[in-house]
Length: 425
Image (cartoon, helix red, strand yellow):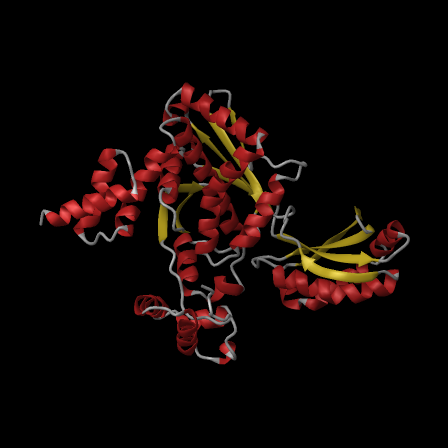
């Protein structure tokens, strides 16, 4: 039997969110429970959602929890994290607590510098084109800075160019990078606008055809580094420390392990990025590309022992986040979360985010090297499973407790436990 539904809804973008919901409900054949769920989720948020995305019909809440115990560059920080995954926030809290005695997390940064790329095609002399572009650097600076005078007013603006010739299947291309200090903005709009303004001039000066004009999310000039030291006594002894180092070396050598190892880092990073209204996809793309910059995909983090036998963790990664523009500036929850963080600059926010990523990585590696990842994760997941089978009120804790006691967090067992609880009432 074929599905007769059509994805065509005439004029959907012109409707109100409530009208869209009704139109989608009819087209998709939604039941009352699904319609009610979408309508309820939209309450109080749909007007903002309608301004942020196209064809909005509802919103989807992500839990925001607080990571405690974080000390970053000597400052105590409460860190909001938006995530749906159990154990992520708990791991950061625990990991941060274990390195407080050594001062927590120490960071450094290369500054808020972003780049946009302009692709130049069709030149028979791409190396000559490269030099022609360098010869116009003063004019390039003027064009870029005139495109965003407000950024220049706040101390940002054009800084440099980098011109590369790359080999492709259709021949060599000349790629112009414009390097821009974006201050407290993530910077996508600023650098994209500059690239759009500059591209026609590059074609005029070089005779090459300009095609793509857009930022790169491999923000390798906007790198943040975080370091922390965990005393061997806080880890569980030398054997645990050495097993954690073995886990790291595994991840650094094998992309299959590195993918999951780095996903754990991003559990922490993306949760703070999302909580502050920044672009999770941009950060994730840049982070994974940076992890492969040497020609193979490896661990984002580095781990070693110091002279006293303590475990030292280092995380260095691109971190293009901002405090102005986009959802960061207009979403009330993002604004409240930034207030909790107490940050005044994008640089300060970036330092905290990378520190959280390092804390998350420590927690995951320690769990893997000791009890295994499932023990802590599934204990926290037990409540989710109880909710999945329909437990309410006190039933949730009763089902979760029995699942944890059994050591098996499974939906079929949760259903049996819930049925037995209700039969005994």
